[in-house]
Image 1 (cartoon, rainbow, N blue to C red):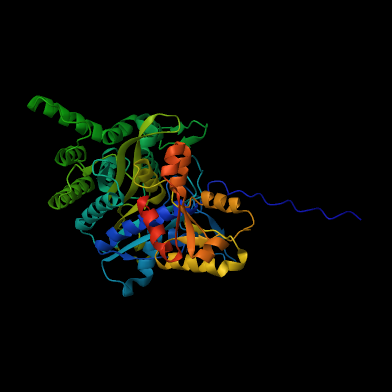
Image 2 (spheres, one colour):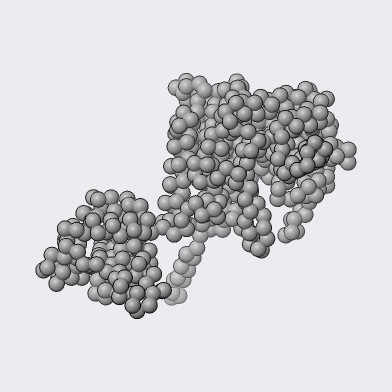
Length: 523
């Protein structure tokens, strides 16, 4: 009789496009989210935690780069034939929540939400299928003051987490302006909104990729299509030359406005205007001229003008928030103002080339999303922060420690006296100091110190039988010890001891003193 075939062992590896997060990363993210939540709360927004799973019907087909309802999401079919999916953002679930609970919620309803989202897309460097988002939205207000407030709050949020003024800019535009451009270009018929819908979707996604693909890549997607470096071909909108020319005037609007401002500055004064110093008034003038033949386009320009005025009244000028026609946002549910937060400082990419850090947040107005459930238009606007990208930016600027210190480790010299060691840890914890007892095999003391080193512990506490009899403990400053071992001479080593003997009653005070010396917060 043949032996039963052994089942192969499962591979211990994360699925493609996913990753694991360990102690310091999780702690840093929690601290940043707490700082963001404090700003949102100060602005009067309430927390909401909704289900990670929604029906495909409720989520809708709004992801960029997708043509089929279930493409781009992780979806499965239930026995009763309903399709369910992991949420791909936090906005689509909000529309369902508001429609379901609108009779119990205030209007306007102001909420913020934080959590993971999932996208079944091709992963790449720094691009994962699961990532964190942090949203804030106002549902039930058609006022441009709601959009201006979101932009002001986003500015305050970036500064609250450690992005200095001058290292970021929030760019705003309006989908109505782009609709006006497409109407002028002949790819939008106001009397038949569904006509050219497929082509408009490609146009939106193409312009949204301007930073990544450049003008030539966008123009290729407006035409026949584009082949990427891997050989994959993306079919374009197949627009004509004149249509493409009109849209590219819109794509290049920011550069044209900057050039015009620079020309004016050269004529009027000796020192030219710095590149990128886009004046909101000049941007409004240019866009109004560009869409002068479109009623919806002119409406969008007026809304931008109103938002800029409301922000200026609060002290948020073009040094922080600018009108930028290149901002489109790829999701198909935006209906009015759209905005994007971009970090302007330079970093080095994987190939050692300098580049700007780029976008960390975006959002806009989506007045039709709740209507899918209620049949009645419910105005809404909001913003989403890419948590992982913002954390990476803070690390680049040195605003978050890359290394998080571990707990104080109480070593075990005598396993029969575990109660004594647990009492020490309890004293430290009650004083707000992070601490633990070594719970491995205590036979080899060297292994205990190696454990403390791997935990990045700042302090080790030692109490053998002799120390117990004399009522003292040994406290080893592991940070100072490492510094001395690496840099100090023998004489300096003798003058700067890294191990201290103190009465047992002074354990907490001495540990607290050492932690304070190294600038380590407690708790």
